[in-house]
Image (tube, rainbow, N blue to C red; front, side):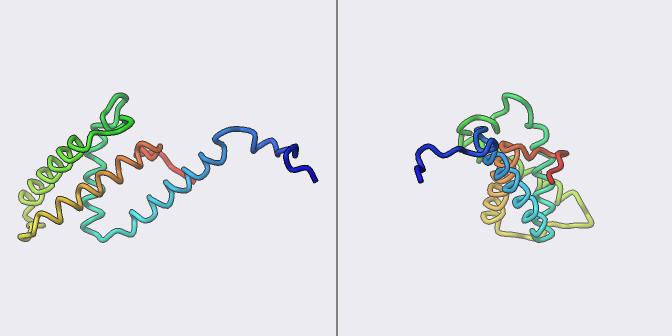
Length: 129
């Protein structure tokens, strides 16, 4: 059998067809695992997502081919300050004294995950099946 001249099924001749399907599966997996986060982390994730909604526009730095690391770190620190202010002003949920180094790192990881999800089509309000 001559394998160099075999005929491909029509669906394999369209470039990107299988890659898009794999990307949808990756987004579904990411969203599923985000639902399994601990309660406090899910709250931070939701709030980070709300904050990023304001930066979700054409030409935003989150859609740069290579986002600037320092801009992402600065955005993470701004988000952390916002989260701290909100927790301090909420009397029903006083923020216990914490080591802020790990919290800053957690916010940075959640921010990078949310940016990655949005860059691959996982914007809020879109439903994937």
